[in-house]
Length: 145
Picture 1 (tube, rainbow, N blue to C red):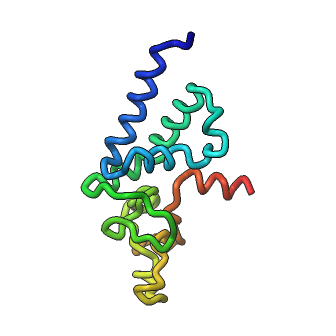
Picture 2: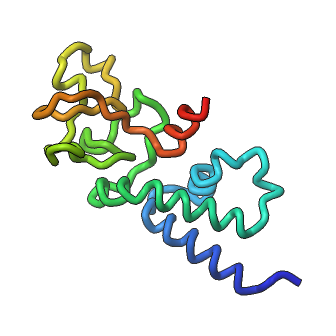
């Protein structure tokens, strides 16, 4: 028989994630957490599920802090606006000078309101490039390709 203690350990970890996304339905939360593991979800051992839940929580820690006043569904694409036009997945401040990042299109004024890429942020002070507001898992997948 499997260890019964694993149940409370996994549900506690899941509870920590869900309370950070209170507007999500349970199915939405599960799909977000296990998105990259969906094809083998049925076969995952409990320790791998726990690791995946903890990884999701760690990768989205900045997002929890940045959106503390506004819990909403994670954006699904570059076209999805971020809450308060602030980064959803990455640190909302410039890593070099600490200035709040802003949408690149607001600085460049190169697109109309309908054409804005809501995943591209820049520092209005440093203007040192574009910071992509993507989940860490997406960044890793691109680096692996």
